[in-house]
Image (tube, rainbow over the protein chains, first blue to last red):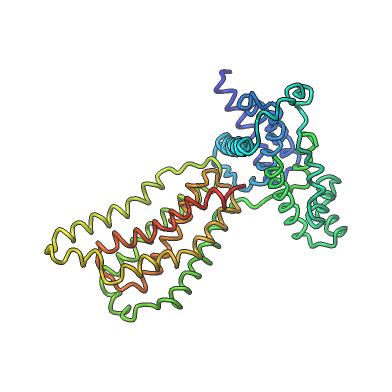
Length: 187
Length: 213
């Protein structure tokens, strides 16, 4: 199979997983996100050669963005174009924030960081989402913890938190959006 | 948190999601926006008193069709700019086309008129109201269009803001036409277009701040 054919087959597979995921198949959606994270890591590593520390943060930020914006994927549209537009948007956003940060701070202050770079750490993000998650207001944090970390159902989460089922869903959605906004501010 | 843990978190308990939110969000936002613009027009300006007589003239309908076609084309562009990686396609051409038509018609009217009357054909008697009125009526539509976009995921923020602004300007011009007494194409070609371009420019400036995600 040539290169083009391989890319095409990969696109078909990823896309069918996403489409099944959007229809409610959690296992397919998990496989989609896991596969996507390796593609994103390669994509960002190539484009952030001087900023290896940023790669994993950006992979996580983009995964969160893909999840939060998954309702904007039109199954008629090529998946590559959709994912690429999101990844590029997050990459440009990061570079712009860094440029603004460096304009405010003397970049020579980073001198002592030279020895801190460590390849073994490349797979760990510097921004800890688990800690950020704990800073969300309780009405958003609790549904996320119950549903997404403990794996409870919407009904069980609603009973535990005293919220209606639709409020649980809305608060999970809002919490993940707030989390994405917190990452942007922290970096 | 490791990336694999994040993947598991995101995939757990997801459930099915709404498949076509773009149409629903824009229908809702344009409905409320147009309602707000109409309400503002009725309160601040009022419908022209001679609307029954005016509605028998073809120019009255041209005056509605012009902003309506700009609005329709811009709506298509705005929905495409709301989704990552969607192409604009022919939408930008469809926005420019009605403007070209009105300019050609205006040029034809001006060339056929005695030179002493040309200034009056362009300026009319109410150009100041038009220049102020259309952007004012556009405010509720603009806010609603930005709300619709913000719930989706535009990646070209200045362009998306421009589309939201132009959509608002075109809907506002359509509503303003029910008040406006002017009936000449050169007036429309200059002042209606200017009234739509003002909110579009505001959108270019505001988009990168308001629409970030």
